[in-house]
View 1 (tube, helix red, strand yellow):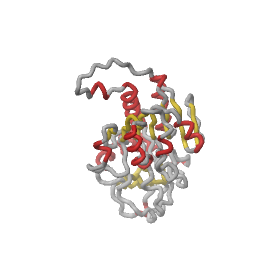
View 2: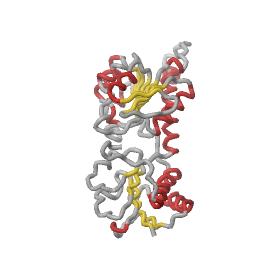
View 3: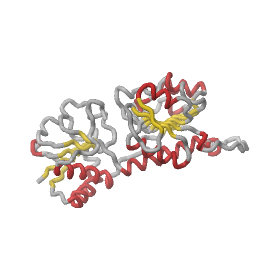
View 4: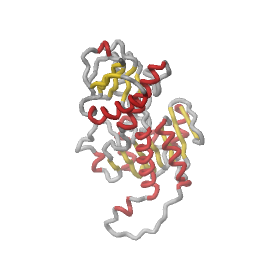
Length: 310
């Protein structure tokens, strides 16, 4: 019998136990699924989340794969004891949640909703915003989340440009890659959305030099990773007015400290890491599908390239 160790932590187990067992039944897989591990050498698969029950993977000599419940793997991928294949989470519900957050906040900035929602002087300003077709949006990161957000924004009418570290192909989206492509993608962008993983190559990708490329008054949306932005450079660009607003969902330290400048800045909106969440019902099916594939000798889905960090 297959042995599956749910090592994502006691807090998550009650929400995942039933959906995982249902997914196993649907896949016709007979397995022992437990949040406890009496014998690491007997474990075939590990379901994991950062902050879970394992920091040393070396005793799990029979383990075929570590299946992460988070889309991000930066807190595990550098673990030197992790020699097993690592799969990140690509959850349809997580993707949909991200699309809704990105689309909602893009429209908020595009339409200038804040000046109507918060209007203490009761100023009558009938200025209409431009149409979406006149507001170029750049997405940094063109994986599953970036591609889904790009198509949702295009459906509303925004011209979308995408950028990734390496060349990608996303139907109907203008794409750039590499260092030269980053300059092209950011130059003149009115709204920038960050959906990159945290790696040494992406840390501080928005800094004083790259922020200067954006259109005056541009908005920055970051539901990706806090380390993607140089915080001091962002605040400076906001203070000068070159940036109109930043809506940030992720931060270098979470929860965001109460005395952090982002909380009090009039051009910053803080959302508490709620842009997207892994949902047990759909994520369980992704995890069990990978176990089914591994048992059948098929390639694993969403396999992490440890040398690249994602």
